[in-house]
Picture 1 (cartoon, helix red, strand yellow):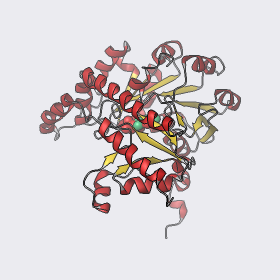
Picture 2 (spheres, rainbow, N blue to C red):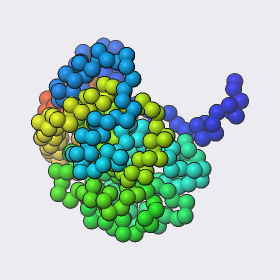
Picture 3 (spheres, protein in one colour):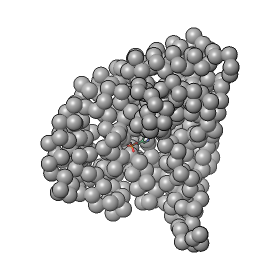
Picture 4 (tube, rainbow, N blue to C red):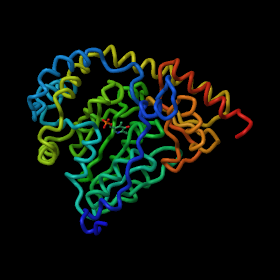
Length: 369
Ligand SMILES: *Cc1c(COP(=O)(O)O)cnc(C)c1O
């Protein structure tokens, strides 16, 4: 046995992430052929074909290190958002950006305020650096900004706003964000996690975070190519913020953190607006199918502006998860966030979504449960 002093002390108290089951594993374990994975909010239409073509060509060059400055992609993003490339950091997924933020700002004892449940990596990354995550329970299923404001003190470095929130799927509106910004000091850095941005902007009350950034430099907007763009498997995410923050974050990041295939795929995906539009349209069609079933069966759910929905099935999510798995459907069970009777379900193609509903219906109405 190693003595515990071997490890960084914060690491010893971290918990391992419980990942969603990979399709390949479920196929092998259960001998099933046809698996529908609605557990990780991926794009059911697949990746942009343009991105796939770009990767095929780029594959011949993988003996050469990628551009450490991620020049072409940052230039393209800067044009899209009317910012300077010096305001952009590209990461190995949004995940890496969240870790970089904690590593850039958090000293031992510093505090970061966030909702609970929300994206688990905020708390893990802050704890890793010896910081203290202040986790505020949702109120009426939303970030409780009143309590966020009460918790601010001289140790507060960061505020995470997951918008839309994962796992609940709902948004904080422009008015709610204004209330937060009008009641916090300028030196607290606010991270706006907009991993589901393209879905969320269909709601006219979704805040304009770029406008917020222009007025308030201590703001970090996080976006990713993993969700709507369908590039979860190559890992690219980025943040938009002030040049000063980019400068510090860049010192912390791995030099070649954005690999060649990720960079080229993201560049191609930015040009494939049709793919994004189709994906968002399918999402809301598929969402409607689920909402109708939930309403017809009096299941409480949270109105979503992302590509997943959180629903109360009045039954232990461990049991429902396992039974759905046996029927070839993978979802994310709510017990992982201590919401025992809830499920988080990603939208699929209409056919996949209907399969989920059919199997869920069987489980909820079977007599032996
Ligand atoms: C998926 C997700 C991310 C980032 O995912 P990456 O694949 O690492 O880019 C960040 N925040 C939230 C809330 C997410 O759901």
